[in-house]
Length: 209
Ligand SMILES: [Zn+2]
Image 1: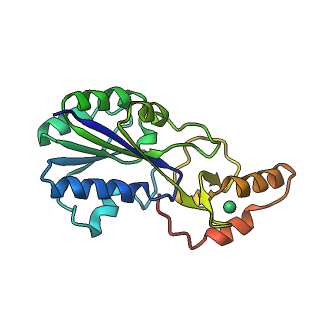
Image 2 (image 1 turned 120 degrees about the horizontal axis):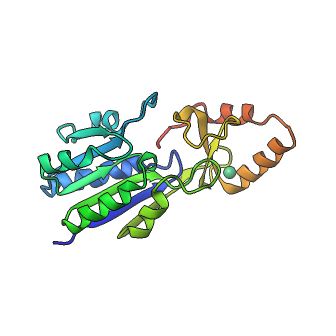
């Protein structure tokens, strides 16, 4: 039977990991051998690793592995567990090598679900996600809620001036719609201080990545 690649993408706080967990729940119910991966990142301080998210679900028996961002750890684990279904969270942090890996899995008849950020905070395609969208069978694009006006948000707005693409930690970001983003950006470029109000508004953000 032919395999499939499903990509679940969108900005931060849009519910991607929850959608991935839902996919895995359906796979388990259908009796598929399933493994979950996420990237092993040095200095990672997120409290939202997929491993912690599934603690309160029916998936606690599903094997979850952190693998290096080059994806070298995938092969042995997939073989060992004879996985029919492979779920990968935070896929934006993996190297482009992952595109070749998931295509091979699809040829082998495996079903792959990938969750990852579509864009970084500068609206650039994030890591391998653009290429993965091209090879996908199914695409689910999610939106967060703008933390200022509550309209659908597509921007993961960084609450400081760092230009690094990879700055891990949800507390450094909030979700904004394009209109609010443009307003804040123009104020920021005029030298105004704007982050205080945004931080206040987002202090009780639900934090679904
Ligand atoms: Zn807005």
